[in-house]
Image (cartoon, helix red, strand yellow):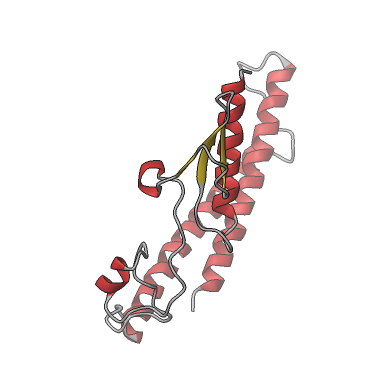
Length: 177
C-alpha cells in the first residue's frame, strides 16, 4: 500500500472519528500537509495548514453556537445553524385520526392478518402431509440418495419457516388494539 493510500485511509478514519465525537473545545478542523506531502487533519494549526471548509468537504461541519434558539427560523439559519430546532412535541397541525377511523383500520388489518394466517396454516398442513414424518415418497428424478436427502432437508426448512411465519402473524394479531 502506498503512503498516499495510507494517508487517505488515516484521513478517512480521522474524519469518521471527528464526526462520531462532538467537538467541545475546538470547532475548527485544519488540513495540514507536511514536508513529505502527507496530509493530516487536526484541530490545531501547526503552520502549513488550511481551514477545512464544510461546504467544500461535505463531511465536516462546525456545530451551531450554543445560544437560545431564535423565534424566527430565518434568523436561526443566519446564525449558522443547519436547520431550525426540532419541536419537543408533535405540531398542532399533525394529522389526528378519530377513534372510529382507527378502529376500522385495525379491523381491516386484523382481517388481512387472519387471511394470511389461514393461508400459512394451510401451507404448513400441506408441507407436513408431503413430509410424511420425515419419510416423503421418492420422486423419479431422485435415483441418487443424496438428492432425496437434499429434498428432505429443504422440506424441513420450509416447515420451520412456515411455523415461524405463523408465530409472527399471531404476534401481530395480538398487538392489534
